[in-house]
Amino acid sequence: MVFSAAAVYNVGIVGFPLGILNRDSFDLDKFWLEASPVMLPARCHILCVDDHEDTSYMLTHLLEQSNYEVVTAGSIRDALRLIEEEKFDLYILDKRLPDGSGLDLCRRFAALTPHVPVIFYSGDAYELHRQEGLYAGAEAYVPKPEIDKLIEAVGHLLADKDCAAAAA
Image (spheres, rainbow, N blue to C red):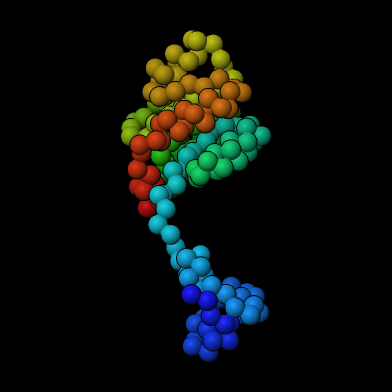
């Protein structure tokens, strides 16, 4: 349905984006579709704990492109504060952090939020390190810099997860 801008203005519809009334006409159906909130699935909420800012930035950028919401922490202390304030659907941890071990943090997360899966993304790439991470409670262990495998692991762990709880 297409109306002239003057006709729509005269019937008292308000709240148009700036500049919409400068056009001679516009598509009202398209306007309401774009202006109305669409019920999309809730974005999964991921906490990334890594003390390297460049890694955190890269992970945030890549995961947000896949429609995940990412929050970062650079230390165990910051991560524990964040899980008290927010709900997360997945944790991505580095094994080495400035104030302790990611393995210890993984165990604490398992005790505090046992339903939230953990992925280690670490430069410690030996089989022994992978086994330590899995033994600490992680569902996956991806060595840096294998970002494609990390994105794949995130997708796999969140594929069937209802992320609506984190949005609440």
